Length: 335
Image 1 (cartoon, one colour):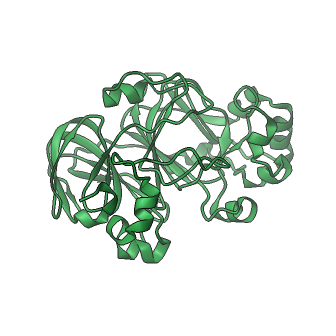
Image 2: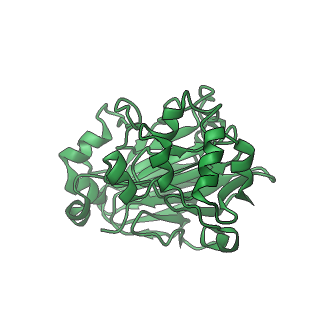
């Protein structure tokens, strides 16, 4: 039996392509690997998604050498299940990353499905969500404008590359391990240095980088080739100061299965402990702590350890989790 057939869980090595910002040490520590290169802050787990404009980077290679994207295309029912294939085709409809911010990320946002289709020729925009895995006491994310901003004001900040004004206009939120943050398309945000997350997102690499100077090579990288006059049309300029509880949640219930996001049209996530009973689904499993065993209906037992990441095919059937283990299962949108 080949890993590519989608008949058993597959443990994945790190997949850390070069990025424009520093980080990666926390990923290495979780996995028990040697520290990576300085600019390896993202591990694209079970990725069928490439960099925007660069189809040679981002894809996950299975241990036997096949690209996961090609394996899913060849055996979609095994990997994804019939209902998912009927809704989304041979497309996982999900990208998961481990992201370790070794420095503050720039102020940026992501287009909606509608904007991405109209201006970037993409089926998906990029709504995303973060599960905070590690953070220092003062680690901060900045999310959403505190008060409503005019289109002219935002355009002026971007034209002058006024980083202080852009960052200062956002809501600063101190985060800790166990918190979750939902980031709707369009909402501007910046992850602070020292924040380590499991990130779920729609499967694109589309970012409108308002604060491009000192991060990207040129302005075109900020608007992805369509000009800021057009690109800034995707920015959510609403005030979020009084509605942050819609985005940020602090919840560490010790249940066997804890649902983390109520956003099934984009993705789903579960925090898992011993005794978790899992339905059959394509998914990405990230083991955050401890050791245990995943007992699958059709593919036997899979040993788990801290730092391991797996892609789980639908064809393995229902599963249960045993042992002294904490994990996160990331799932595609509901068909």
